Amino acid sequence: MIRTAFASVLLFAAGVAVLALETDGFAAFTTETARRLAVARTPVPVPSVALRDSTGDRFFLPQPGRPMLVEFIYSSCPTLCVALGDSFARIQERIRRGGGEPLPQLLSVSFDPARDDQKALQAYAEAHGADPAHWRVAVPERANELRILLETFGVVVIPDGEGGFVHNAALHLVDAQGRLSAIFDPEEIEPALRGLRR
Image 1 (cartoon, rainbow, N blue to C red):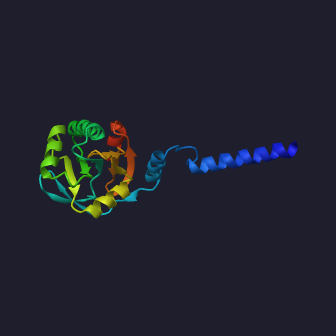
Image 2: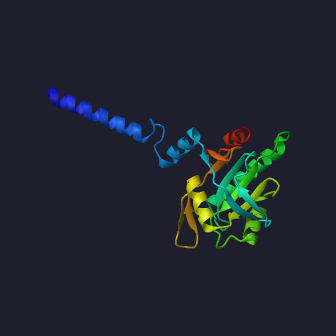
Image 3: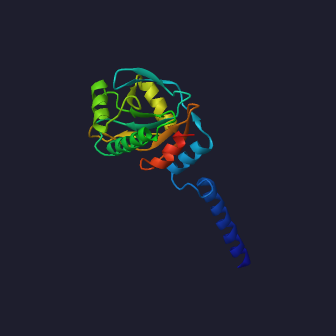
């Protein structure tokens, strides 16, 4: 009986140890939370990728020296991307009212290059009131660079079979050193703005 109790205690302790290891010390019970904790602890360098924005201008991500909030969207999305665009519109307004310090850049990156041409990106930008001086809506120039960006930022995109996509949604902070350094939920405007002012 004592052996059985002792074995049960050992088995329980081993289970707790495995659970603690798998949940990052009981801090992460989902892969998304684990990804956010890992990025916060060890920022990830963002590879240089060429993008084309809604005005037709070509530029590169990251842009060292200037913090940036990045979201991933597709212009015909009826749900998550609308919420992301609304969050960015509120952040853009808060940044405009902030004054004084250099304004960070907001960037919406489309993962649907087949349909999101310049006209579609312009329509998305206009629908959300994006001011190109502060908020760019863009698409990577090459498919392989889009794949690299999605992998770097941990964005999962799955065709839904009806012409749209199922995808995760978040605001990604790229710091002034060009590293992915924090990930926020779309409604977390205050933490995102604090991160931009680092």
